[in-house]
Figure (tube, rainbow, N blue to C red):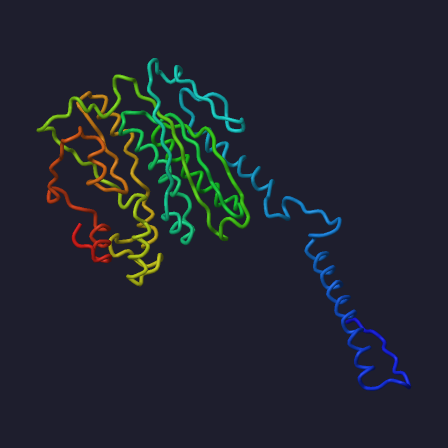
Length: 341
């Protein structure tokens, strides 16, 4: 409260007194605004000599360091021939000769998990989503005949929750270990204001190698009469989850509801079934020398992905009655009213 004194003179009229009071009101208002602004500035620590720490800005160096220490044994568990050094350097090192390659072609890939992440975050099931990340990348490498050699991840959040992030990286390590691919590095980014509380994003990058003579597809050898072999999926994998989440919303089910398509599991748990890793089975098949091409069926489905490994002008004949879709696909088709799978 700012008060000003205005004496009443014997000669004052109503008009003269009003004029002098109004002048003082303007001065009092200006002083009050300045006082309030100064108090707000001091309270927020944004003015004067008040220091602002990195932690006050929302970034915890200690949490980042703790996560690195938790990640080290996870990464170590994925070591394979060719890995040089350990996590902590400026870059991951890999020796191709030590891995047994003399004339290799390097194959690289990168991907994410899409909005399947939202289900993991809302159900707080973080331990398997890292497998999806690895699978979506390395499955793209193996269809070109390449053995995945090493993997790097990117984890970004608004506030780093160490236990949560460590659980995610644990899944990444499990995926890498399952396909003999080393987790040799990554990046953790804590960006206050960029992500809503409880949300994070993932990206993965991998490099594989294949001997030059074993590179797929072998387009020149593909001919009419060749046979297509389909390898089953484990479920929805990591594509189409914007549609999946919309179907679940329309159904009125929650993530904790019993899954109509997976007895004994909740909707959330069933939909979080990790993307299948095709690396070992496909590499074994490729080594027979009888495989001419492999296709990873992702977002574009069969119609868009098969042509990517066929010679120009050649098509493929598929009989959809020759296999039975998993129950989850029938349920999604009915819920989206898109027709039979």
